[in-house]
Image (tube, rainbow, N blue to C red):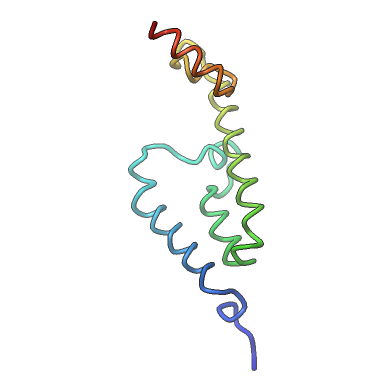
Length: 111
């Protein structure tokens, strides 16, 4: 009996892909900005990449690559923000990404 891609991967892969489609269609447009990795690299968005990878290789095989892609997206975001003029950004965006440093600066600004 021939094996189709539906037979090869279990339903969790299709549930995950369906959730991503819902996010892309209904939530993503509301946030008002694009995927930083897509903007910087000129490729597909991170969610599109993860959805495609899940459908091609299955959820468990796609998981590590998806996590890496979202880390790369954060790096792309920081690169884009660093290329902008510091004076046009709020102070918390001018930091180097160290969460503890961000919290200390914000707390000291309150006191």
